[in-house]
Figure (cartoon, rainbow, N blue to C red):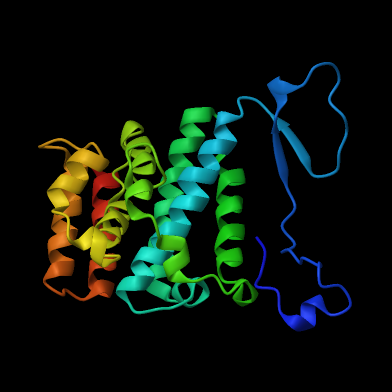
Length: 236
């Protein structure tokens, strides 16, 4: 990720671009012909769909949740929102649900995915990026679509016996993100964009959270409810 470049950072070279220290290049192992070159930080992997889903259902999903929950609490920057203990724990629980699901789906060791989550949460808190809630959360309908970061991650969790209550809260928050999305009926968004049908437990939980937001229920209490609901489902 690239921070906002200040005049001081460009001093001596106006074309200079600075990046964070993160350095990993996953590539599709099956796409090579002949021997694979030994390139530092390059990770050939098959099936590559694991890395695509890891990016979408963990990083992108978690980033979106930070934005949508942060908006409800009035934050401006991503680093402010992830610094909120309630938001931080909600996002981590959501990403951990996805991590377990991805581990089961692709037979990848869970501890490596959890380490990736810890690194992401640290990176979200980087103040130098100056990433805003509005930038990360924009284009809500696309991000709510059935195969994208939120609904797609929730479906993956359901496929592996995990009820993603924290992601459900994030989807409900997304439907309050801006005026354009708020004009839509929540049922229509869930049915036509998320492709959730009547009786879908995801739809029911999202609508429950949506109504609580409408009724101005304390957002911290809602996040705590999401944690507890997730634990209750896991026990069952």
